[in-house]
Amino acid sequence: MTRSTAMILLVLIMVLAGCGDSESGPITCAGRGDQPEATSGDEAGVTEAEAAGMSIAELLMTDSRFDEFRNLTAQTVSAGLGMSWLEAWDMQAEQMGDNRDGVTVFVPANAAFERLDPGLASVLREGELDNELRYTLLGHHYVHRLYPSSEWESGPQRTWRGGGNVELTLDPPTWGGCPIAQTDIRVNNGYIHVLGGIVIPDEIQQAAAG
Image (cartoon, rainbow, N blue to C red):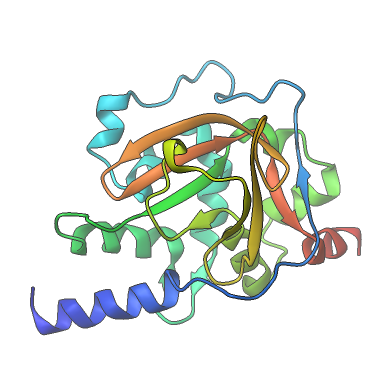
């Protein structure tokens, strides 16, 4: 690994993967369905074998079940890197070598966005949130470590910087109050778990109401 590559990776880890110690404010699960779908419409998503050869960014760009979340991620710029989170993840995957480290993403399926209140849906889809609020929203869905369901422990979980702590329950399985509809999609730099809702911080609810 060259010195420049190592420096890029170090900055990436510091900016994107730093875990916050602060307590999160009030959160709600928006777009929650009684029967949370792991798929949207007739799309079944990528196969297990296909996912294993992809990075998180590549899967989000390929699997149409996650179009809404991918778009939100692509809109959010990491100030420290001058690129979107989606681009940063893609670069991280290229630089991680044998991938002893990794991340876990709790990804809302498109169906959750489709169930949102129109005002909140508009705020999330139309780019009306400032970058800091989008950063906070995304932070509630990421854990900077490999976290398969076999290792889950109920209670508050530390998320990426900006997300604070999010509650994980096991019976039934929920993340921030949102049902976990599918677990353990293994990609080459982490895990994806599919949510039947979106974890929304209170300040975003207030922005949508305003």
